[in-house]
Each structure stands twice: as C-alpha cells, then as structure tokens.
Image (cartoon, rainbow, N blue to C red; front, top):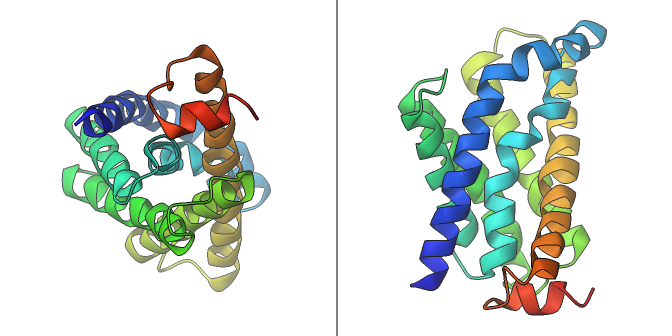
Length: 187
C-alpha cells in the first residue's frame, strides 16, 4: 500500500510539473526549432520523468507505468493542451518504455546506465507517438532529428536526471522505507 501511495504522490507532483511545462515549453524550445527543425524535442524529456523516477524509487513491476499514467492524468485534468485522452495515451506509451527496460533487467539493476536506457525508451515512445499524431506530414529529416533528440532528452533529462534526483532524495532520508533509499544513499 505504501508503494502505491508514494508512487501516486510522485505522480501528482510530476503531473503538476508537466502542466507547468505545457505552459512554457513553446517559447523555451522555439530557438532550438529555428536552429534545427525537430531539435525542440531536446527539452521534452521533462515530460518523461515520471515513469523513470517512479520506477527507480519503487523498484517493482508496474511502478514506472503507473506513475507515468497518473502524472499524465493529472496533467490532463489540469487542462493539458493536447486534450485529455491524448495526454493519457502519451503517458501510457511513455511509461511502457521505461517499464520495458526495467523488465528487461528483471527489476534488479538500478545503475545510472539502466536509468538512462529507461529514459531513452520513454523518448522513443514519445517520438513515435508525436510523429504519428502531429508530424506525419514532415519529412524524414525532421522526423529523424526529432527522434534522435527525443531519445537524447529522455536519456539525459528523464534517465540521468531521475537517477540523480533519487540519490538526492535518499540523502535526505525521504526514501528510507524503500530499497532505493537504502542503496542510493550509500552511492
């Protein structure tokens, strides 16, 4: 029960961050888009944090998917620009990417490179979903840049960022009840 509550709290907090990012991402990423169309996704990793963070903290099957779906649902309820169902579908796809990587490693490896792989997988999911829904008419050069930048963003912002965030939280003692808190605090 504690796992579900903590995952939900993480998800709600990140869902609010997602909604905040919805409101400011366009002007922040516009210069990247002007420099190299498709590269705006270099900063989209913020939308990918919930699943990786939830998976790293809870360390149990379904945590990454649950956390990303709840965060997307909170974002949708707060008025996401893409509509409710599309936002929640994005959460499902992105959370599944992180969940798949944690599953491949049998929920037993929480090293930085596994977190970065999980983040990269969320980036692949985000890019595939975005291209299918918003960028089909764009050429292969744009789509390639978008995918590569989304994967990099997922690996760095969602993967590496979440890994460092778990370590920071562990040092405060906030995760003491979890394996992530006990092992991360020593690293």
